[in-house]
Image 1: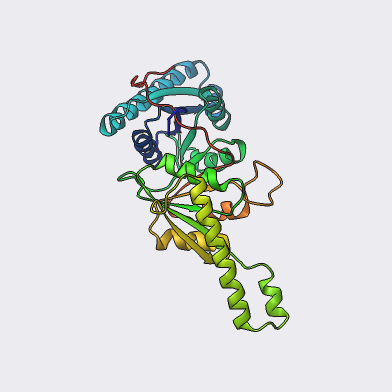
Image 2: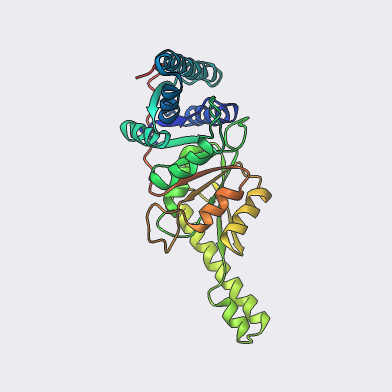
Length: 311
C-alpha cells in the first residue's frame, strides 16, 4: 500500500477523547500517514458567552481560544514524541459537525478518528453524538474509538456479506492495521430454512441443506480474500449460522478482536448514507473499536515530518 490521504482526528480535549487521539497516532505510525488533530470551539457556546458577559466577552473568548490551542498543541507534542509521529493541529470555531466535515473535505482525509464518547471542557456533550452523526453525513471511513490503546491493533474482525463493499473492507482493514491478524467472517441463514421447517421437511434434510449453504459461503469467502490480495495464511476464515449482528458480536468476543471493520450497509440498502440495521446494532453493542465506511477508501499519504502548527 502507498499512503496518500491524511488522518484527521477530532478531539474535544477531554480525557476520553485522548484515547481516540492516541489511537490515531498509533495508526499513523503503522501506516505512515499524515496526521492532523482538530478541535472545534462550539459557536453556540461562544454566542452564549457574548450574551452573558457583554463587553467582557471578547476577553473571555480569547482565553478560550488560547486555552484550546495550547491544549491541542500539547496533545500533539506529547503523543507525537511518544509515538514518533509529527502531527499538525487545526483549531476551528463553528458547528462541530460542519467544521469537521469541512476540514475533512479540505484535507481530503482518508480516515476520520473520533471517540465513541467525549465531553468538552465547557461541560457540553460533544463526540458521543457527533461520531454517529458523522457516519450519516460522510462517505469517508470513520473510526470510533472505545478502548484505551496499549498497542497496535492485534486482531481485526471483518464481516463479509459478499456485497460490493466486501473486498474494499478487507483491503481497508489490511491498510489500517498492516500487522494485525485478520478474521473474515460471514454470517448466514439458509434461504427458505424457516419455510422448510414450517412445511414439515425432515430436520436431517434441513441440516444437510444448511451444511451445503455453509460450504458454498466458505468457498465465496476464500474467493473474497483472494480478490483482496490475501494469501491462504493471511487471514482466518469463519462461516457461522445465525443473524449477522448476533454472530458478529459473538465472534468479536470469542476471537478477542480489538477492531471491527464494516460498511454502513450491505445488500439491499436504498440510501447510500443510511446506516444499516446490522451496522447500527454493532455500533451500539460492540466493546471494541469500530471502523465504518460506505465506499472504497482512499489510501493514506505519508507524513511530511512537519510538527504541529495550525495551518
